[in-house]
Length: 217
Image (spheres, rainbow, N blue to C red):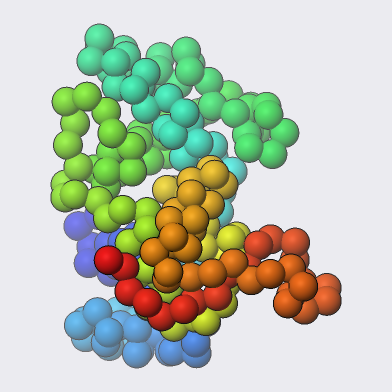
């Protein structure tokens, strides 16, 4: 984690910043929202850090790293406990590109190795994956509560499964996980699936959901 408060904001509150930009908030307003001096230097640095974080989050290497951690978390922890260095771990548990099933752009180099280490440590710290002997910094919210917070923060009335998954790209990198969480919200009366007959012509085939406004029990 960076020591810079501005860089930490772009990492820890990336989704909120993105949503505020989509609503039309200015960088000065966003800077003030996080109780920082909205002076020009802070505004420019926050915007630059955000652009860098957006590029990092959309890179094929980061996506590969997320899926790698989800698939091999316990094996990674066991190999590290046995003294394997990170280069050996990645070499013995090779990551694959989510698009074509091959190594993204060839074998990892040192710069990419840093991405794998960073994603593994952060996902363990946040409780996204659980490994023996490691404890998250704080108890993570359940998948359902994470979705409820996103719904409340964005004030949306309907959304697609794909949009729900994007509220936490790492936790919901696998489609079946977000679908299971949505099904639980349906059971609790918080949302309902929009029947196909009610969908507008030409909409994406991704399932859509309507918020009913009943809180979680």
